Length: 111
Length: 350
Ligand code: SF4
Ligand code: SF4
Image (cartoon, rainbow over all chains, first blue to last red; front, side):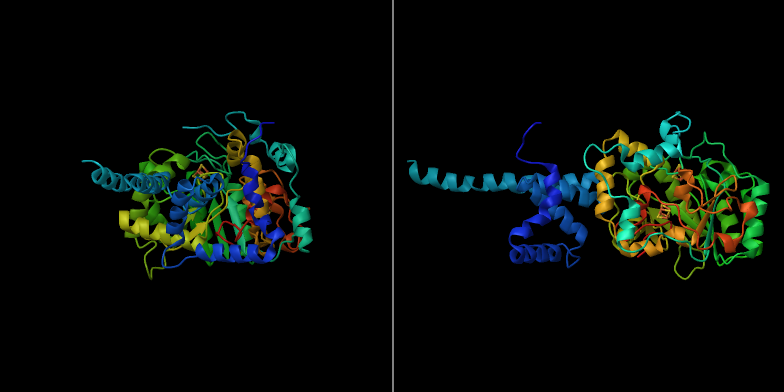
């Protein structure tokens, strides 16, 4: 069998992390579940944010989870891809904006 | 247009073969707990029929559409059609039952040549809620059906229609090219007649079921999304949205197997099992009549050839006292009715 670091089946076992520290585990999941409840932002909007963030932090489990979650909520693939471009723009922008630092440095050092 | 499983001579056209697959045949590792075990754990086995409230009559498997997920395996190539004689037997039963709801389904029930006659006769008997499950496109498919909306209005029919999504792409990919546009046209006409409008007695409900191997989200939030999108984009109104879970039978089962989604889907149903839904699954207050008059606990059991556990098996022999309290015939597909908030023809059950 091919060995890989990530096994999609592990996503289902996520809840088990509480077994080795119930108190902190429960606190985390309480918090997690509260975060995704309908609030000022709709659960649908939060799902799209989660999907974009999942791609930014490149977590395959979260990508699977929030792609599935988006489908159940009727989010279309076009909307999902748009959310990813937001993530991509911020990632790209975050690199580029540091260019100002580079430019400052060059401007300072060059005659 | 895709063909029905039956027309394709697929082995999954056979209810027994489907039941065999559902009994763990395809699992590569481990096994699913049986539905029987699962409901036994919460002391809910055997599941028994209560008083009859809903008589659901399937007047034939013929349909103008061939939706990918269809649990009936309906389509233009299906010729099973209820005869007038069987319809007369249904009317006899309707006169004498406790059922307050009559629910006509198919295929496209309107394609049965005796459909209008049956609706007229049944509405003379009178039930509190007279539902026709219409796929909408039938109303625009051929001139002979153009007056169906007026016909429905005249008889105070409660129209319940499938709508997989508020966008064209998702709807057409599940139900066929052009379905979305025709459905929107039909909804507009129904709205113009007063269907689905605030304070109107003419009820128009939509049915959502996921367009793929995943479960539906919360019914209320989906309803809100459907309402705001259909209102904003098309000025369309409707009453309620019923979110239903796809049951792993017939064409949806075929899809699950062909796309290697079957195991994961079954596990997700079992994981989402909610014991609180069991006492309200629709088989407990519904009787389903097949096109040939055979009796089933629900439309799904009908498609699996799982008849009622009773010595009465046909509408012509109907006796409420004997059918009452019968043990419901269950199998692994029943997990579909008990996942999450539960699922029935009327949407969530808990
Ligand atoms: S419209 Fe309904 S009955 Fe016809 S194919 Fe689609 S799901 Fe089946
Ligand atoms: S599939 Fe039919 S028999 Fe099984 S729980 Fe659902 S309604 Fe009842």
